[in-house]
Structures are given as C-alpha cells and as structure tokens.
Image (cartoon, rainbow, N blue to C red):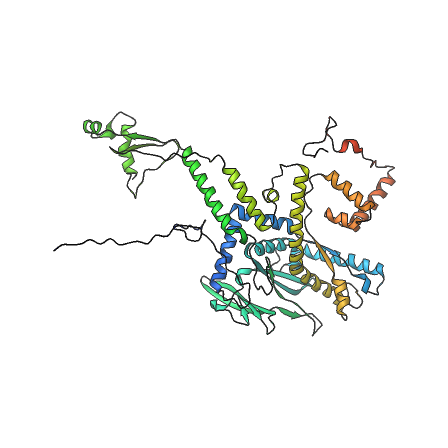
Length: 524
C-alpha cells in the first residue's frame, strides 16, 4: 500500500510595526487607545496598558524621555511663580489697597509654597517640586489626579496637596464604561465629571477601589463649591474628552522604529569592533595528533578547552565572538561573516531627519529638543521663540488646571481668617473672581545674546509697549522686590560716597578684540 506524504501549509505573515514576530519589552510596538468620547467603550485593561507603554517610552527611551523633559523644563521648570493681577476696574476698593493686598497675597503664597510641611500632604516636597513631578506624569501618561485638602499648620488653616498617578483612575474591577462612568470618571446627567474611582494596592496583588467626589464646599459656605479631586489632562484634542493623551503619542511608532534601527546599528558596530581569530583544523592534522590539548601549539591546544566551555557550535551552544577571542573550529567548518559597512555613512543624516519629524509631531523645534544650536543667531533665536510659544500654551493650560484651584482656596482661607481683607470677596462672585485673577510664570526662556535682549527691552519701554513688571518677569524677577532692593543699594552706595558708572560703550559690546562681530552673530 502506497503511503502518500502530506505537507502542512504554514501561513506566514509579513512583519511590520503592527505585526512583529519578535517583540521585546524594550522595543514592543504600541498602538495607543484612549477614550475621546464619553460613550466610547475602552476597557480598563486597554487604557492602563496604553498608559503603561507611554510611561515606559517616556522614561526608558532616550528620544521619548528627552521630549518629555524638554516640555516639562520649558513649561514648569522647578515650579510656577505667582503674579497676582487683581482686576481693579470692577472693584470699588482704593488702588493702593489693591496693590498692597496683591503683594501680601503673593508673600503668603510664596512662604506657603516653600514649606513642605505646609503644602505637601506627606510633608516631603515644596509645591514647586510637586508641580514638576505632576507635570512629568501628566505629559508621560496623559493625566494626573490632584487632591486639594485643608489642614491646620501652626494654628493657621492652609491648603495642602497630593498627586496620584493618573493610571490609578479606572473603573472598578475593569468594568465596562456606562453613561455615568467612563474610564474611572463619574458623570452626572449633563456629562459633567462629579467624581473619580481610585485604585490602590494594599498588598501584593490585593487592591481596593475608592470612590471620591470631585467637589467640596468652601469652609464657612454651604452653596459655594471648590475642587477637591481634580483630574489634570494634557493633550486634549476634542470636546468631551475624559482622559488625556501622552505627549509622545503622535510620534510613538516613529520613536520605536527609530530606536530599533539605532540599536541594530550599535550592535553591528560593536560586533565589527571585535577582533576574533578563528582557527580552522585540518582532518589529516587531527589524525596525526588526536589529542590536541597535549600539543605544544598554542592554537591547537585550545580545541579541548573550547569544548569544555560548551562552545561546540551547536544551536544550543553557539561559538561566540569577543575582543581578543581565539576560537577553534571543527574539521570542515568555516566562519563566514556578512559584509556590512559599519557604521552606516549616512546614519546620522537619517536619524536627524527622523528626529525632525518626531519633534514636529510634538510641537518642539528640532534644535531645542536636541539642545543643539549650531546655526546663526537668527535661526537659533527663532527656534527658541517657537519653543517658547509652545511652552506658554502648555503652561497656561496646566496652570489653570493645577495651580489656580489651589490659589483660589488659599485666598479664600486668608480672607476667612482675617489675614487679608479683600472687600466683597465672600459675597460677590465677580468681585471674588477679580481678586483671584492671577498670572503664572515659568522658567526664563534661554537667552543667546543678553545684550540684544536688553536693547530690545529698552526699546519696548521707550515705546511704552511694555512695563518694568513685564520685563522683570521675562528675567524671572519680581519688579517690586527689584525696586526695593535697588533703593537699598542706592542708599548704601550714596552713604559711602560711591557713584556707579552705568554707561555702555555700544561700539564694543557686540565685538571681539579686533572690533569684528563676535562668533555666531549675523553679518548685515
């Protein structure tokens, strides 16, 4: 009886960034899923997996972490500084009293923000340090949860703050979304968020879920509410978006594939840098000398030791390469290495092009993201100003969500305890909003040519298109404090009979020893 052999057909699929045959933890592909619509059915598992992958890429990958750090450094820096800007036009209070109250509120805020035991639930960090960590978590995962409470600090009631990883906000036990709960966000009938579900680990593989309310009442009031739990979102792209989007999301696949290419080139360069000698054995030589380990030949005496180390050339025990290795081969075996030029001649040009696309996707100029300024002054300054515009937009959004609610509670408590007297604050909502008005300033924008910036500031002041307060804020300073300090210094100098010479030789300010424009300046 004839036996017919059958061959099983195996269906093969081509590898792509969406279908990989060999994933690793470091370079696994990620296709983000996040709820944009309150009715979208995105499971808790998929949401957390998405945020976990985004956080891993933002902390473990050089490109991803560099982009997030660039945005956080430019947006928040070491913390945001307060400028109380009371809307005086709708107030009937004397303008001098308004200015005095503004300075007093700023002083109270600055002292509170620099005292960890006053502003931090755990008593560990200043408010600026907490804000920086919260911003990094928000940009890395898309959102961060803020708790704003009240406690008594040395006899005075002040706010205190705690932040939760945004990934801890999720539906209980991974339940499906409903009309009243979406990805851990509780909604009322109008679709307004009213609370959150927080998941925390009490013991290994043991979790508890806590439902918290978003709003609480102001002390001494039964009808005015304040934020108590506040989910801070980044990357909002459409109305009714309940959860945020990580910063690197638009360039996620590009970063992963570029990292794979870079890793492959680095490994190839390392392998080609090894100096490994392979000794080929002849059958006739082995027949005349069956025991190579007793040979006086330095090379022939290595075969037995290679076998002892397990490098037999089999699949399970391959022969390895390394710096200065001398490997012996069995009779008839030969080593053939593929010819490959390493490193690739245009490696950096290719990487540079990809980095420009990735930087564009997250809205940061390539020069600023890599901190490389090797163009002329105008091009470098344009890149810095473009990044500053991005940072300003992000800062306004982040400050309105994370800083303003805490500040409003602080002003309320100061008025309630009589530390500050803002007439009409407790009774009139417009008056209260006028007293609560504030600007939030971040780190100073990089200054390539201080002399040109100083000249521009002088022109703005002479043209009356700016104020001394504005110019001081651009330098990260408070004009009132600068003025007070200048008055003290002027009085001290005058008392010692000293008169400073503040004149500037404009011809030599921007030139080198030869009187030519300094390096990096544009020639006219």
